[in-house]
Length: 323
Image (cartoon, rainbow, N blue to C red; front, side):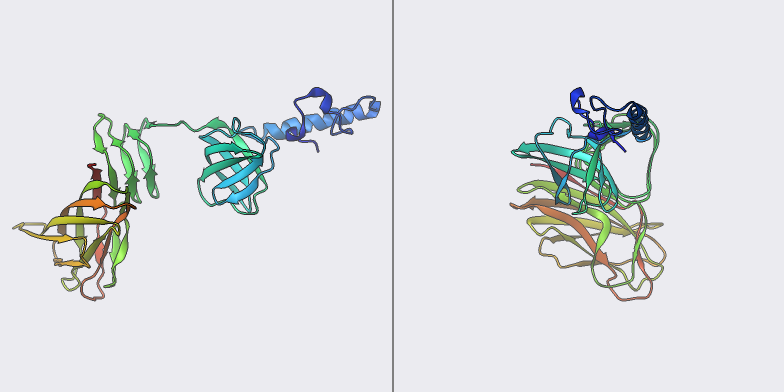
């Protein structure tokens, strides 16, 4: 069956043999066939009207890029939605497109998955994602992690069952910034029954090269046994830093203890009460070198025990870039 993507914008070029075209001198019996074929093609497009297949042939280049012959940068504009026919159907948005004779290279960010050598077709959405800040008029509920690369303004509540990693401002309904730097928060409890330090599931972010940061945070730690305690380390491979911390057991007779550590630390240990949550706050000044890198929390039991140590939901850390 003829497909709209195979039709030409030049009327005289739509002269393929009926029923796929309307050639000069076609037999009377072909007129009905061609008309019905056109109706079927229009109906097919109508049922998939959110997407436009321009008939371009994509060539796989990488997990996030493909090329198309010619200069098609106008059609493949940044922020436009895209559907890719690969080993499965993939959806995403165009990040950029650039022409370098003889091809246009299109870079995409996919909602999930990645491009592969099985890429065979692409279609463009009739809608373009809004660039810049997002405003959500109501509550925002997220069942996984919420990565943020721009500003998000929410007039209602924000409920996240995973972690939040924000690279820009999160703005409350009154216009007050929750954080103007990097922010990570635990959306759910995480438990560990090992003395081997492991990366926290949520508490990490990437620091820029040759920069100064002020990192602060709060951890809430529980364990029904006093044996394991809590071992931790902060890791940033390309930087120098100094830190101070305060920890205390919450409850009646709250008393604080303090300590300090730096970039040469292998690990530190905190006592954990079997009856009260331990609250651990920290204040770190970080200077990154030429490469920058991921700043993250690693933690485990300090003493092996069958009872798991739990880092509670709501534990957080943030980094404010100073220079």
